[in-house]
Image (cartoon, rainbow, N blue to C red; front, side, top):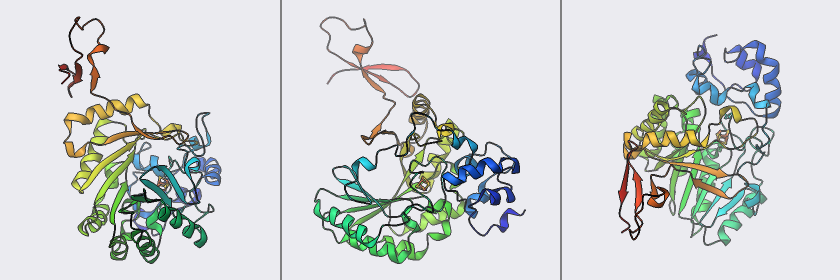
Length: 362
Ligand code: SF4
């Protein structure tokens, strides 16, 4: 099978077999996975997969695995508690100054670790009805504290440019909405879809547009993906990154460093590294928090400040995100027995080589 002939997205396990992306003996199990979780592998992503590497970091993200049928007790269908903070359909209002606005439940690709995997895919509610959309806009309009609206889903760039332009105009017309942020995988998954029409739809009077690109391995930032990103940034749309820490994908210092450098080379400011959420059937892709902190310690100091980002944990149940370090500062008190009577509390600060230094209180 000539992989360059792939012209459409692969959605069935049988198609993955035909294109050499999974072995025929795994077909029956993968059909069980497909019955539960959506599959989509675009031509751009299929072309990136090294069929000869059983641990290929791109394949691990997009090719289904029988391990997805094994759920842990700690895993849950709504791992970050969106539902607990949804006042009206389509809106998640967890923090005072911003809301998530979930417009669509479809994506160009379906990531095997997705924290909304129970909600996204064909057959799930595909888009908000006109009435639900109007009610969501009314909610945003009535809350003057909402400064930022984050369009997410699903992937909001799956909407047609015309629909997108209408939504952007509706939001920008609300006086207190100053920032519209879109979270997308499309520049990587299907770079050609970042067309002049899409870019024009995102440029809007009355609000500032930001785009957050989700990518987890430097190889995703192909020449075509970089050109798609450049079309957005050249139009004046600033970009940040978001990545998920994934076992066998980016949980080693070299891979993580290469990813951050690739973002910065593309003019994308590294923003968040998410610890893997407790989504059902994803334990084979999660690392420990200790491993995440070790990787962040490696990045700090050895890699340009432009490449630094926050390591974030979404607290299960809906309590929100917290940065989970590592911390380089602690009170000297934690060094039991080393503080002299009458001496003021000082701090211990650890440098990037692991050496500890004392710093005065003020
Ligand atoms: S693109 Fe985002 S919403 Fe869609 S499957 Fe991947 S992680 Fe989930």
